[in-house]
Length: 411
Image (tube, rainbow, N blue to C red; front, side, top):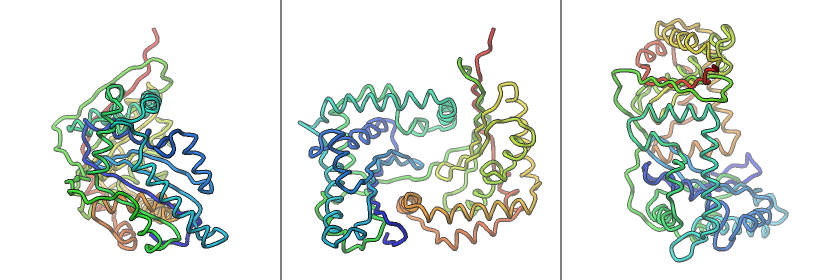
């Protein structure tokens, strides 16, 4: 993706595999191990020194999911070689950067088909601490519980990083087995974003061990049937200062349904923007929540609402959330607010083009879904959404799950 807009060069490598409950934790731990060590760079200090040598480059690994796909991603951000004081220095920096990425990804710190024991134990504990930290964050904990209660498929119920129990059961050999599966079977997408040309890059990738592979049947989108009743769970915990209310509604459009643009606006109107009904009426006007927002997940077909509020206001806030949704279904939408929301959504979308990370994330999504909507078509589709379109689509929004986290009552 050649561009002269930025003075950085970004290299990102994405390994995509089917989302499986049995492999999530091992793949998550892989991102920890390959972030801090390789055969050529056996510890975190050596990795850090190499990034300093690459003119202060930033190297990071990440694990994400999209629908029913699980992703391990490696990224290097560095000064664009073209800005170095000589073409020769720029060439060496570019070559050095691709060699470093190859070493970190394809030459891990492994002996006898197992990751280095001491590095493994250290990073295993780091991942356990990270997962425990998610549980300590009550809002994220509530979101994890909502996911667990909402989805029917076990793999969809699990956190992206897996579970503490699964991480503890991993061994250096079992994670190496997961690594082997990744490099030999995963779909690989590579994005280079910056002021370079394809002819600069392809010879450098020729040195990477990129072998042909059998195409895996990836399912980037997840849809499940409508439940006849709402699943409702309330949990109490000590040391909570406020309650958390989480709601999951199904809005199950086919991935290529033209109404997906209407869904973007419906979410922004409901709770996904500062102009939304939930923000303006539940939070600002009625003071029923400290924080409240909604999010539509096109990859799963669910619209979720999260609210942080006082425990004595949960019931009233819940009723008002449902009332605001009902108002949308009835077409009780001010046209000037809708127009302002559409303009805001378009501006946010266009502003992503000012961020290399956002541009690459969008590109990876397009590669995964095999679908690309040109910017002008996207903008035109958003701006064409009407009050009637939103009200009609809102009829398909059905509450499926309610999770409430409350402070323990003081006796």
